[in-house]
Image 1: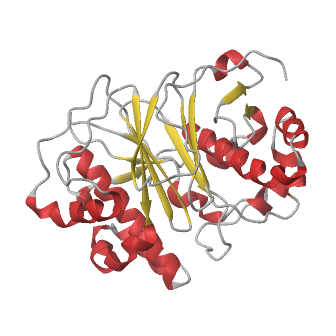
Image 2 (image 1 turned 120 degrees about the vertical axis):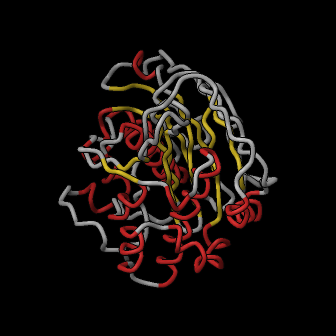
Length: 324
């Protein structure tokens, strides 16, 4: 997620012209995280240990889980969890100990209590969720960084591994999980973006700019946010961050249309090898999950209560072949 308040200076600034004016430096806080996947169904452990019961109680309070086994994650599925950060902030004092030294140092550098509390709660919730799925101690999970700067979860032995990705915006925390395919997730709050048309022209593909201009004027601001969210999810799935040009692929711009990848590198056939899933949240925020595999089933879990016009769990839609 890149559209946040400009209060955090934890990530070194970049000079990417118009694009950088819109991007937020905290995008690196929750970059795509992945480890090598395993084929087939992921077999979940019997039950978490007693030591983790307090953490599962927190998941139960935030997401309505039953505190038992983690949901079975099939090879052709993505699980996307939505969790409210501010509800978890009351437990931040306890959650702080789950973070490793680098995460604690980063939290200490954040300006403002609310930002710091949300960061701690978000990192801790990700660890709790991963520990639940993998039957591992959340505090013992080791995060590593690839040569390209992509954070990941260090594999241990022959146990199950996960591909995962995280996004946050304000109170919204989304965590997407997959057993074997690279994936990305993004969430963006609706807000006034100065001169979004110029930002789109500087960053979007030509087809997307034309599609944006074809929409009624009153719908273009939301369409810009929806398109940016979908593009960010794709970029995060690729794992190259700001190094991936946003105009290298085309997504559906209309916020009322299903999220989908229309072309990749000018190739519509290549786009058919992806699954995109999106939702408009009760807060007005837009969310999107992107998976570099066709026909994936995306299943929402957690605080998906009365979402506005969500896309249901679906198999990915093939890219259309119409010229537009």
